[in-house]
Length: 178
Image (cartoon, rainbow, N blue to C red; front, side, top):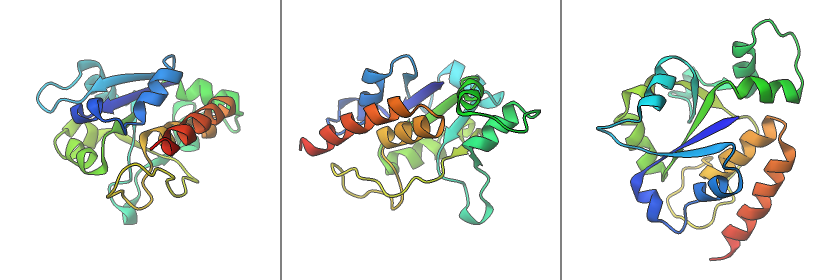
């Protein structure tokens, strides 16, 4: 599985950034690309245009939810499957990049508005997200998760339970240190 943290430049200096936890603990699964409005990353642009990337971001319209669930994404990649195991999910999702916007919710919405390639990217929704336990920032979006919680949930739903649990421990310590 390849997770791309598309990071707003302001997030690079914030001590409250949780994306750095995923990058530090799982560099084999996570990479960071700094977002630029005028000079988008060429590989990421191409992945969005060719359907090789899924953007984890709330659906465009709650009434018209066009985001796919993880299981649906797997089935879209392997449409001949009638059933699949957690290992099959990991193998199938590994064929696509999963983009997570690593920014405040206000900045993430700005990134979406100013990046046509992100607007056209297929969306990925995760079920069972629940409420965020992130305590270090104000003005959080109701029902919105921080970056590390998104990675953790993605790992869990892809059957990578050991990795998800490791991130949960690290995030709990991070969240309590302030």
